[in-house]
Image: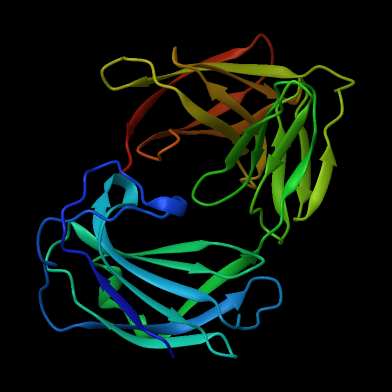
Length: 296
């Protein structure tokens, strides 16, 4: 087992990058610690075969935590490779002495999409020596659609979005190899279950649907840009998707039939969101206002 510990104590100018696209690490003090050290270990699994991934790189970053569990300035990095069965550890690391710091466990391997797992103060109270980290084989869902069509691919905690370009092309890199719902916001929504790698052709609709129009605003009343989806009330499956611009307005194309829908909106950074259940009974378009509130 190879263990590399890197402690950076020199102050580097903010916003600079090292050659080769490497990440700049900035710090101006020693690592804030509190209590006994933590021990990381576990196994890295292939999501498709449920087998261990050999020689996967596991990098444990101790970093400042930005809003919504985003990784900020890194204070220390601990690296280890998995064995033939995909196992790694135990890796001893200092316990953060402040809730402003957390661990971000980066796992990567050739042919896979990187997985990043957040380990904050609450997660650090669990057994970190028996983690299961899952890697998705690197694959894409791509295809063609009418130009400037909004397309959503279901994911947690919120769907991923793409928009077809002027040639009608669109693509989701690092998509799941397991069955996943996709919806395209054509006049009558196109829906499919996909699994990467897959190429999908979104056809021109041969029928018109209904529309749900709305606006996203902050509690102050100011408009907000964000992604929006509609989910079927009973099943929770994706029913439609749309994007609100800087003026907050959005349009969701719907099937021409009554439905109870859950409308969900999130900003690209996940900081603001809203959910509202609405009953669609028919045309003309229903208009809804969603108040976006801080989620984290």
